[in-house]
Image 1 (cartoon, rainbow, N blue to C red):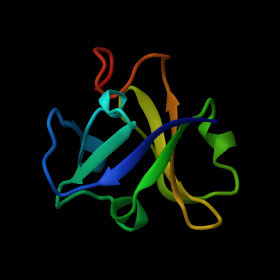
Image 2: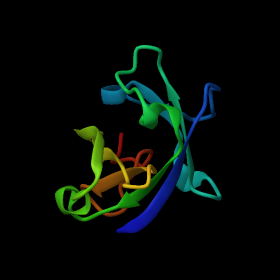
Image 3: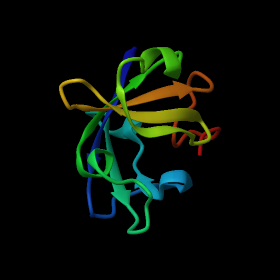
Image 4: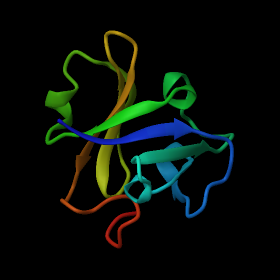
Length: 115
């Protein structure tokens, strides 16, 4: 498991947002932020509810989502965002974590081969 980014929920539009259809959320490219912060702005009709939509999260790159998520409470089942498979979980002490299994190295949310 390797640190990837921190996700912060906002209601403000941010420059260069991209839209992730499965969760109906606008995100920023955390690789361009000096502290690897991803801003998330949910559409009112987003299917995402609860802690994932209300709380900040820490995201980790993993080589296998199934193995890395053992023992964690599922908050949002794995879904395909084009460049990766992504899922959200709650740790035993209540933290929200995102686990990301990238399809290719060097491909992210705003790269030419990404979303």
